[in-house]
Image (cartoon, rainbow, N blue to C red):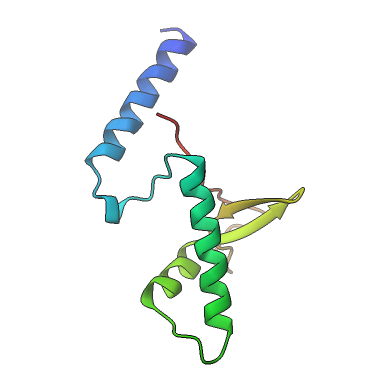
Length: 99
């Protein structure tokens, strides 16, 4: 099996998995716009949680618990939050899939 066949097979399998997931229970980011929306929502949630008097929602807490933002060369990337249990030096990035 050549590299192009393997890539196509991989993409088809990922696409099938994404299509079977419920939209409200889906951690797959399929397009760059969706990825950028997550970054903006996370920034807003972080602001709300730090600001006294702002109405906080469960979604705000969930986003901050699930994602963090790492800026590299002025480009923001979604990452899994780093905590004490994480392996030192290991950063897990969220990426988009392309159909």
